[in-house]
Length: 376
Image (cartoon, rainbow, N blue to C red; front, top):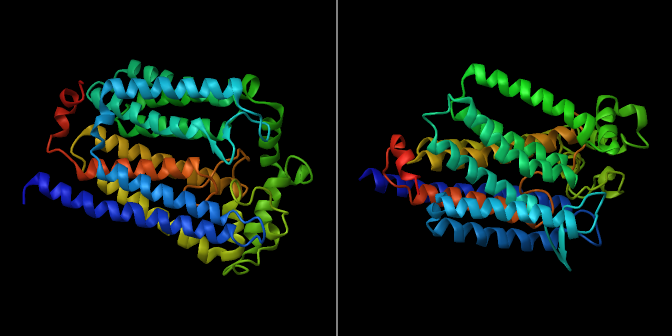
């Protein structure tokens, strides 16, 4: 079998794994949502999962390599920035943030689209300059591209999504071959940016969340309430959990936002440590599959895009779990596939669909020729 044929077969096999694991995780989330009696979020979430599966199938069936073209990426980047500006101007304020366009029963969060656009942009940028990554200018310029949407996200304010996009950029910089000297520059720059963010960029309630993270027991009835209740819920699950539908912290609504920001804690309360290990195992298998696909990728763009999706999902997972375990300040982030919501579900399934397409329609082009291939 030719190299191209082998890659196509491998891509087809990978697409089933990339679909089966997210569906399993999504159904675990549905089981957790469905335990809360009337007004259950489960029926609507099942619809979003079905739509996400369709989106994945469509993306995986089509040749998505057109996404690497410069006009497509530039249009996507400018479009994402325009939506982020527009949401600041006309979107209603929900829970203290202007992050959503509301269309009756449907809401859309432009930040979800921005995540995919940033991954494609960085994959394009570093795939064309992988031989020049030693020049610090490319790191600075790529950072500027990412800093603009991050700044717009902080204005919403959406600290969690801004941090996740920053993690995607930093992860792709690392895998692109940055030198140790320039890595030190990145760390120093990051420290200065964090100091400036604390002083000028964060709202008072966001600073309170970070302070409550350092000492959550100081104000458990105020800024530390959410973090405290999440930790109680996780701890009360013990080894095997209380059973589906018997989570008192979540079912009695002591745990806020149990279907989105704190679904990990709600799940841990009902499924216990064993259930948490099972969820992490599923995510681990998904990340391993993405890494294997990236290693077999025909071009640098394919590899970097796949790694970018892996970093995005991993950042969501660890930030969400860290918040629910009291290890990180509360920023309001979802866990991939399990949290309620259509916008992020469609984005996550679409991202994996694009990865499956890139693997399925892989071209037998050596990575060293990537700079030539991506010139258009």
